Image 1 (cartoon, rainbow, N blue to C red):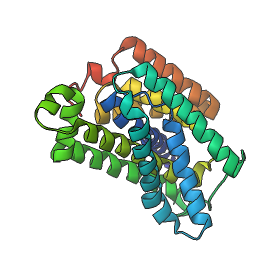
Image 2 (cartoon, helix red, strand yellow):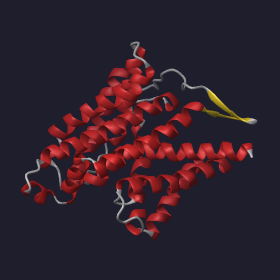
Image 3 (cartoon, rainbow, N blue to C red):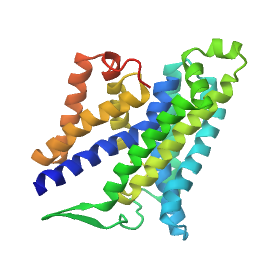
Image 4 (cartoon, rainbow, N blue to C red):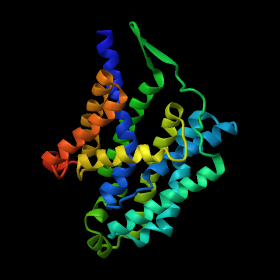
Length: 289
């Protein structure tokens, strides 16, 4: 029984990890149809924000929960104003532009910090004992954070004027503009929020994974697989795909090891998209957010 409970927590952590790294991309790609290949670098920048801040005496929790999303959100704002705002509706152009942006970020960070892995202190909160097994208290904290984050995004989209206006703008920008809505500002705010969520994710993961300039490559593949598998609905799609793919990854990692767990995740996504080309929410939960 202790083994099953410990395994369940590890699977839950895998699901939460997948949802955490994917949510920022789901906001930008799912709502705005911007193929942001620099998404992984936004997570990487969140990680380096925490490393730099903690090395200069800033409290770890403040660096992860406040500074990382704030700094990366500001970077996202600059990127949107200087680059992305000219490319809406041009998917291939945004793909190429953000790919170049990701290379720029990697080059700048490598020249400043080098190519080696940077870490902060070991994960806080110690361990939780489950019979003969132990689990990381910080991993349990991340599960809780993901639940809160998904709830906040849902409440924002569903019950605030910003969420209502943002959804209306993404669905029909011309009609929104005719009603007096500044679609340019809505796009700017939405992209910046997506970047901030990505920065928060990168900051929260750095005590576990560390950070290096090209770590974004690891993040972005999983994020795109999850978002595309989930379909058009942001929250329902991201959550359902994270549960399915994270569950497959967690179970196969326990049985065969982490490498085959990643392979199983990829095969599960391929089979899912073969059976449901529009993703999970294209087949189910069509009215979900």
